[in-house]
Image 1 (cartoon, helix red, strand yellow):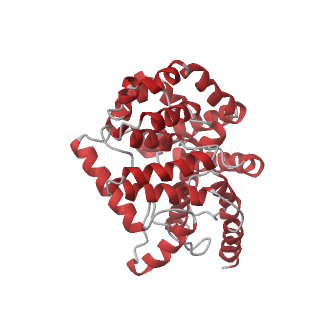
Image 2 (image 1 turned 90 degrees about the vertical axis):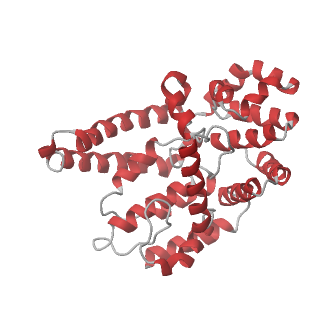
Length: 327
């Protein structure tokens, strides 16, 4: 209870000082509602607020902004978001193969920006902390090796030898990443950029065409998910500043807490759901969950369910690459 009180006080203090990525995410939630209401002009005005107020914009949101402009044939704003996309690491092949953003190749206003792709992409590369990225890549490779053994290894060893190795590795990597968080912030997209996987069209093309261009960094995020898949104490007091500064996405923070709530009961006390990944079995808690979600910038749980259902339909109908990305 004391830990929860400290966390809520920290949240209150953060919200009291200036613009932050809680408000950033709330703006994109409103943009979703504009898109679904077919009010793209209002969505564009909200995008202007993001563009003018935040130096760092997540890659998927750059693509989203570009899609909204292209659907209106707003070539001037499309050029603005195309430049921003390249500066945030969005690969040219992805712009070319998305059925909405491919329109930029027909606009006179975007010709120069397309020619400048290499130099704009260099700005992205310079912004990435390559030393930390190499550390995370190395840890993630080890994580995937141990995880693969647990999931696909010899069946009698999965929950014995391999399982014990996996748990030890999760804790070791968690401690390394936590030190990075204390010094730099959470090592996500803002700090270490996107995985190199996305730069290789031969490797990523099929997945992006099937699941859509909602690209994001997942390396440290997945390692934390693995760590919190067993009873653990939360580190919300360390992570909340990273959410506020854009190093950690609100949905990722919520997912960590869902795993802690699901697996942490008993040993480390009772934790609270955000209903991002795992859901609170008690439906009466939805108002409290929505209150927690709103504090970190997430949409309501009902809106999340709505978007999830829309996404499932898009997968089924193979339209993920033809429609605007939703949160």
